[in-house]
Image 1 (cartoon, one colour):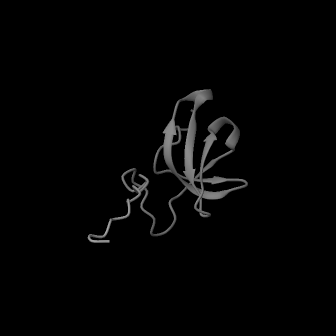
Image 2 (tube, one colour):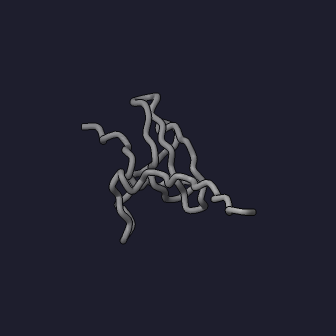
Image 3 (cartoon, helix red, strand yellow):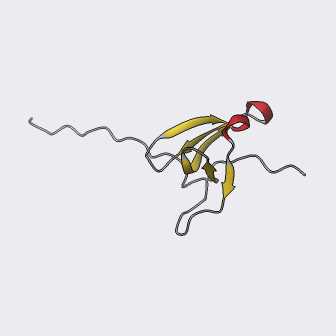
Length: 83
């Protein structure tokens, strides 16, 4: 039986970049890719077939739902009146 594909909200370990949270998952099979957020505040798009990722249990206190995995929207600076 094959393992389920990586999904948004999965915690993973990459041999070079460390532990991270999947923010986006695209494609299937040989074309599957993921965007992972790592502790150094980088986001990397990785091809699953080359990335050697292993699935982790969510860290203590971490929420693993896909709703929490969505990246925050950047806020535009507010203009001051009269300035």
